Each structure stands twice: as C-alpha cells, then as structure tokens.
Image (cartoon, rainbow, N blue to C red):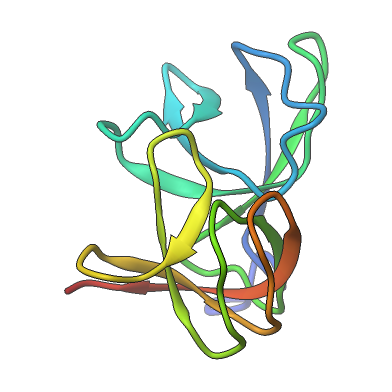
Length: 123
C-alpha cells in the first residue's frame, strides 16, 4: 500500500563499538554502521533507549521522527519546558546557544534521567 507508515515511531536497533548498557538517555551518532556516544564532532542521530554490550543490540530513538517521549541524561539543572542542547559525551543541558534536540517535560538536575520530547531546533 503506497504511503503507509513503515513504523509508528523512529526506533532503531544498532550494534555499538562500546558497551552502552549504562547509557540510557545519552545522545549518540552513527559511525561505520555502529552507534557511539556523541563526541562533539559527528552528526547527532538519537538517544539510547535501551543500551547493550558490544555483542548485543542497542535501541535508539532518532531525533528525526521519534514520537512520544524518552529519558535523557542531564549534566546540569533544567526546568520543565526548557529546550535542551547536547554536550560532548552525549549528556543534555539547558539550551544556551547551540541547536536544541529535546524539550524537558520535567525538572531535573545533573546525573538524573528525565522525561523529554525529542526535537531538532537549529539556532
């Protein structure tokens, strides 16, 4: 059927070059077909929803099309409604001057996982 949706939301399964089992909520990029934590230089792809070891598969929600909300890992204090940017290493902070990739749905502080809606807002 032409025009039918292939997926309800943009969740993808990827292998990784590093163990991502404790990296739920971190932003990642895709390099050579594998996800890795964003290092500040590659193209941002999405957020780890369910991380795994290098021998497993990681579930990633993409910035370009994931519906609903995900948990994001903070590296600072944010308030509900704040737009969030990403720091090298894949953590989220309140947006100041860089592109925004999520909106906080709840308040949070550094090292917390909070609920956020993914977006792509260029400054």
